[in-house]
Image (cartoon, rainbow, N blue to C red):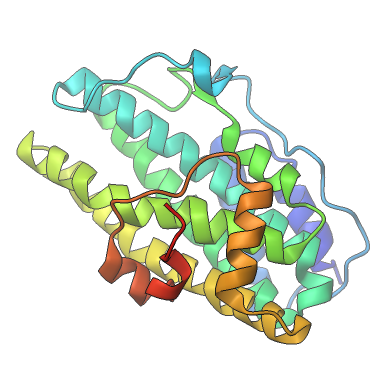
Length: 262
């Protein structure tokens, strides 16, 4: 029987975006069906395989996208979101494969479920780009999200604190405004895709807060206090308002977490 770690690594080392999404869905299905052994016999890659396109640039070298009012601006924004979802596939796979032995089968199930969702989100956005006359890879992108994986590869608490509880939680804050922009521009199809992503991301952040709280309990730490310490130590940006308070509360990020972080 193939191991879950082996299947995860194979998906991460698949470079073609469509093939990676399909491989990720297959890993999640096989795990759920009991066809993968709970064993971690291979290490996760330091860097997952990437396609030749999009061309990756430093974040500060990225061209300005505008605010999404024109069709060209909306395509650029959808491309950026597709790239975020593409990298998020590997972030979720890496969490399951890197920390699954320590955290247990439920953790693996949750993060493979997240990876499957991210693969679906990517597929929806990539398909939408094609209907608008573009494609994923047509524009440059940056790989700053994977920097967070490298920074937190040593500690599951740091990974949970930064990736779902900061990076994905930021999506809860900004996506409603983006949806409104697409609706205002008459692009309801794109808006519906983003609403689906927002609904799923609340669950993803909740997985992060739930497992983070369990790690804190096992270490005898206060979740809000440890979260703030780890974010200060491992996140290079700023956590600042405005916050989508209702979505954050639904995801388990209480006011106690957010107090004093801005």
